[in-house]
Length: 212
Image 1 (cartoon, rainbow, N blue to C red):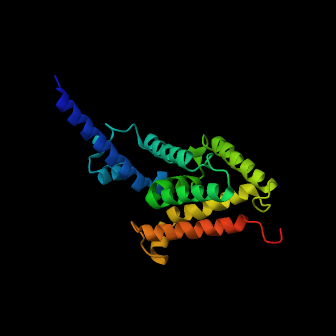
Image 2: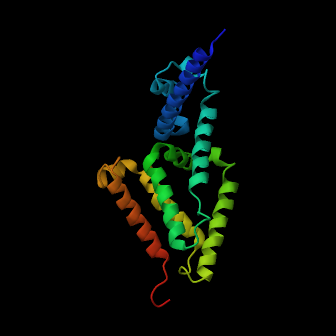
């Protein structure tokens, strides 16, 4: 019979192996997409045999969907218009900071979503209705700001899409950023500078002109 100490060690070991598998899968799917990734490569990255891998996962497709849902859940949790803030500058600044921080901290996980979109988005079919609902909510708030004269008239949906494109760049093109701007991994000053520049660019793009 397994005692509590032994059971605890087994649990810890299993959790550590699962973490290694997830990290390996994120790297593999991010680099090669679903079609190019193999369970053999994931097992090698995780430091285990392929046969061992199937003690922890049902299969490549299930693992891929799990990671895809993970990034969607994180975005659903942190990349929203904060309801506790009312002014456009505060709402947009928080939104941009959250999105860029995720792009900086987890570019590989973020790129799994991009890779799936580029391959046709088969595994995202369940996601689009919720995504559309989310963007409509943001659109409504932006339209309210326009009516209240807080920002200039603009295409709200395109505005949101442009924020997404600009912030997602730092995940999808992290290698290019490294070479063109410099490797800022762990450099808080550089990160804050980029966040500030992107935020200023977007806020200036929606401000009312002096003659408006």
